[in-house]
Image (cartoon, rainbow, N blue to C red; front, top):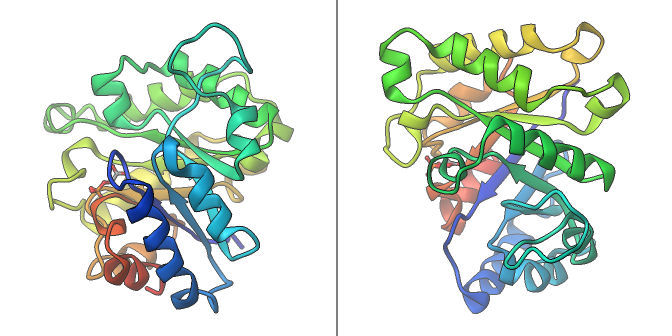
Length: 245
Ligand code: PGA
């Protein structure tokens, strides 16, 4: 049995006050939810404050990015030990916005993945095709390359922490969700690419315009193990509904 994960990716939204206020109000609303993991991924400057509010609760803390070295002269970067020290247990890696705007590649994703694993963070590795790639019929080829290169050199014992998020780029922030069937087709394909010994245990989340009114149908698919939620994670009402799908 794979325990579902509902993760909120706040992207570059919420100041310290707004972030703390949000989790203070969310905490009691979801305190009785134990059959799925709830993760909040706020921007770096508010991780500590949010982490302090949700410590010892059933809400876990995740970061949206990390650098692969533990420390050094890398102005503006943040490392896995730093994320751990403020209470993070998850980290998003290779989000399509980072690939698009900040030069993230499968190679950097792989380095970041190993940094996360070294420090026992659950990496949420994001993959997904663009609209152009889908229309050209390249979806499976693109996904296969992202998996083979982004997740290369893992040994079986590394896999237990790994979480994958399939996020079709054309569905992110556009209101266009992949149909549950479209998503399931790719999720099953991804699972088929994973080492046989671990494939059935790896959580594969869907992301891209997940909303309260489509989460149930998505979660009913056999290979969808949760959601990575952007826009709808910014409001308590919608995020709570998604958590309690
Ligand atoms: P969205 O974002 O839910 O706003 O489409 C999802 C994501 O980018 O992780």
